[in-house]
Length: 279
Length: 278
Image (cartoon, rainbow over all chains, first blue to last red; front, side):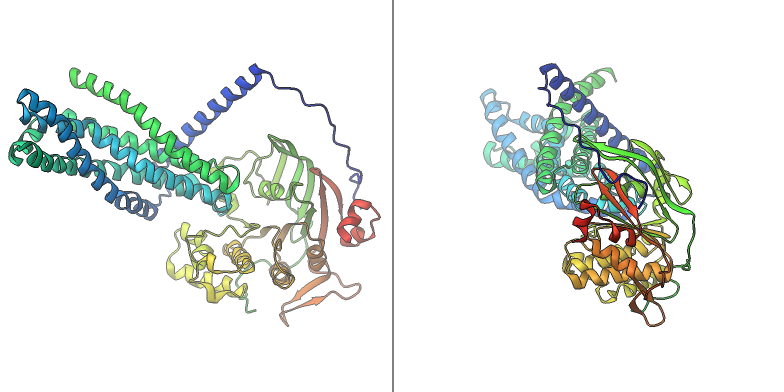
């Protein structure tokens, strides 16, 4: 027998104190700050890992296939009809002033600057941010993430960075495709609905675009890619409470990334317009 | 079983050097402290059975020993180095020297058995020609060579545990941590798992820290040995000692309640310990 006591000390019990309002608010604020800090830490490492070894190229390619190729059907379908509905809505207004030819201009600007990046970002967030959160969350609750760490692999390097890099590469490509298909949808709608010639539509749609417009759309899609991938990874790796927690994280990933995309879009638009004026 | 002699370089024997050393280790979560000042050592080539009810901190103890969790207070030394508070980058290197068998196996469900077992080697950049023979060798050791191309979901619970043991062995670690390796398994499958642990201990001299709530697992390790000549498990005769020492450490309310040999455990009249013996 060891010299350790056989009798465990009785647990000290005391009546729990009722939490004060200030205490609850302080705890909530601390919790929020802690989550922001954890998210910032994960986001920083997801990028920093890309510049040091080991890198997981095969995982990145696999994620590009899953996120990029997998999202293509919904991006194509929604892009086409968004372009078409834009033409129908704006065209009917322009008809009142006899300026139907301006339809190509407005649809092109709206798609390249705004609707292309944001709609594609929201669609991919709905499909992939949730997918990332549920996949990583399931791995966490079944101890696969711990097993990975136990075998000497850094999960942020193996699981997070490839997903972030893959999304950063494929979302601008998906956005470009979405914009092109949107213009195609707009052209079809303008030909059949407004009796505008396809050549006029395309000529005006291309002529109105400036380099700053393209850069605005491109930079937005990069930022949205970063948001949806890091939010998905963060929610997945913070799962608590088994399968129920995985479900919660999946929902949270879509909600948080979608809201962040919309909010960030406002500030990016303001910044882009400011820079376009200055440069 | 057809284990290759190259599976592990260590030879059986005894040593007074501590492979794992806990000193006043505390850890807790929102609900309060779980481990309260845990102090114990696992000597090299020793098997320490960590016994306790569910929720007493057995898994936490193993995860701290592997550097997966950092204690709030106290120090943990493993293989001569202080792993408390080490940066994750250094811990990743340290963990390559420690095998960890998770309670439910924790196999990567999207990878085949062969890919799971060879994962560490693949991450280290080993070629397919190097990985395949090693994977086959450890899968042969756990008698699951035929499952190399199957997915974990196609295996039974016991087979998944054996694959998990094979995965932990691929880098020939001198220390293996077992988290309830027989929990939820039928007696025959449990016996297969215990036989594997005996083989690792008696043939390859692996130091083991085994968490369980089943006392019979501990006594099986204490009272039996694996004979590498006949490749069978044999009961130790009276007076015969095993090639490695087996000790018990009972946790209760996050503290060490009992620490001693199987004989001392059996002889104890303590009502709480008696409940394990029934």
